[in-house]
Image (cartoon, rainbow, N blue to C red; front, side, top):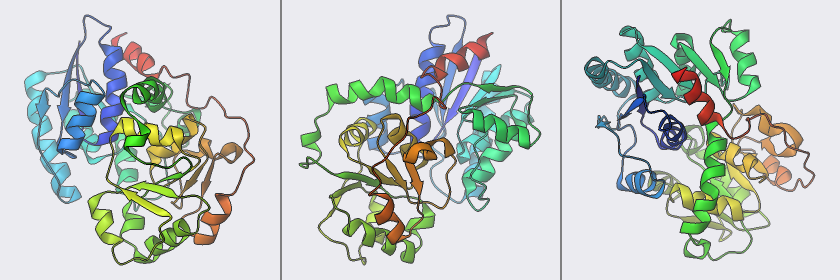
Length: 347
């Protein structure tokens, strides 16, 4: 059996690493790893190939940045060439990026079976390109691996009931595997010199491209009762150059995955607009305040482990003070999602 796995953004490398490790246990499975080049830089190469011991892709399509239409179109053209050459039994796609929809569409046109990992998520915000990508991918996939029971219910509401598999969340597998490796390979003192701090991330266009929202968020950060450490992308760093914020805000350079886990494990709470970090905070029992107006991961909202506050300064400062937390559920599975996915594909 031959499987072509298509990835292109940083979180997808982490997810694919989990499934690839599970597929390696089957002698009769050949996995071809295709990197679209949607995200690429030396830091990413270092982090995902060297630190996390992920093998280098068999194909790097080097599509790079561009408009959504340009990027998706170029990916489809190049992915189609790979699929025609490799003739796989399955195309495996992850999440909700342009790489995901491009890989799915190219496979569907060639009548190749599609497996979608992280199927069934919905934010109900069609202004988000990720929402469009995930809905369309779910519609044309052969099998849908749902990370939670809620994702299964959402698919059923859309009339998608066949070939839906509850796999659990591959990111839960990942955090269980890599948290010890992070502590072995990294030292927190080399990253920051704080004993108590909040961890913050901000990168979504709805926040970074809206000066009023960005200003409100950083005003709240400035008034927190602990310092907030923010690994910040150079683009966002430029955008906040004209915003006043206090010394309470500690901006640091972007960090790798293991360093991020270490920052998360040692933080007091998390403030983020990242979907992935919401979950990772939940997995490591770190309370989270989400700087968005919605979340796909509604399971994290139970027990006060996560609050949706948008860019409302007063709400941010209110929810960061919450100290009463309930028991967590097993909504994301048992940490063996990779094994479940591999087992289904090879049966």
